[in-house]
Length: 159
Image (cartoon, rainbow, N blue to C red; front, side):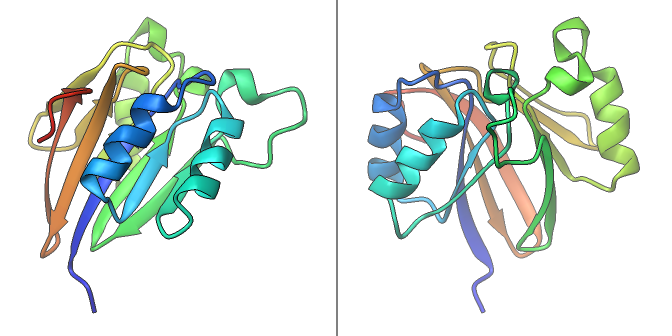
């Protein structure tokens, strides 16, 4: 059974997936996590990278009754619990504390969100919080033996 995983995290692609396709091609991740806006972009990436597991959630621009994706997902990849959402349902533009507390209550090790278009990564020892930003940045997570390393990069600077 595999115990090492490479994950790329993207959000808010808004019909511009060219950078995402470049980084997925270069990094060859096991998973791509798309945090919403737009669900069609995640579907296109699934078509292009049909051997890569691409998991997405619904963003605020995906609503209107047409989205098949949930607004939130909890994943367990290699023993690391990852909570993913777009962020609008937690009002992350007004601060991330509510989302951080919810993620902690749900037992997440990493809480992913988008919506603000502002990349950030912080790990306060309790929980890691990541926003991969928008089309010019992406997040990465490496999981090995139940632990993880993570960060946010600009496109063009492979980790």
